[in-house]
Image (cartoon, rainbow, N blue to C red; front, side, top):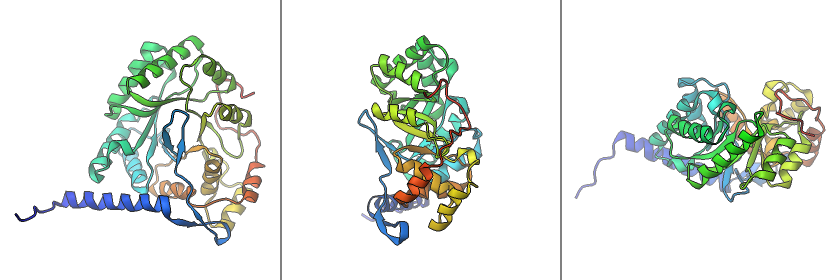
Length: 319
């Protein structure tokens, strides 16, 4: 029997799958150009979480991204570039666009949904056991998904009782398979300690603003004590520090961009890093931030830039 003809769509899918396989091989085996011309293995692109799962270390953040074509195109550009982690939130009001982009890309490339890590968050107005569960289900519908890889409390809000009810709802949702992992965002030390003392399941991450100019050392130390990973949003300090001459000197010497230096520094400290962009070239450049290694001297110089600078705020003090 003669073999059946391959359709143009199937041919495109096969080519995309081959490119994806090539990308995976490069990620795991290729030597990369290091500091001073040294060859070194590429940094692992996933991080182990305290519940036994893994999370891709670099994610496309979609804060303030519109719920339309621009965001869909940015997500598809990110997935084409090699990202496997998208970070959204109910508050961002773009979950539908994220879901449409994921579906389009998976259908075009033949990639299983399971290979893309999806995070979203519960907004403060939905704290409380039943409200949390309903909000989670609503976000799943907007994404068109059966489960999330990670679901976060967007902030501790004000009511400790409702906050704990929300956490109980997430623990239940995890048992039901609606979400693989659960965590928190914008939790200061006091709020995090209170949750740890009352939780049956520890959060796997705390998503907070972290960059060289605002390192939140005490909060980071508390998270490390309980094996809770930092997800660093605003790793570029919302662009406010890209012209810092000390970062610029390192970037020029290594032939990198200031943004790549800042993202690399955060990843080298073991953080999940969440750069945001809707521009394909910057999305690609940000992803390439893990493809080199800063020297110990450069890491120390960047560590010394701490000035307690933040563009946002936590619910309570980090002290």
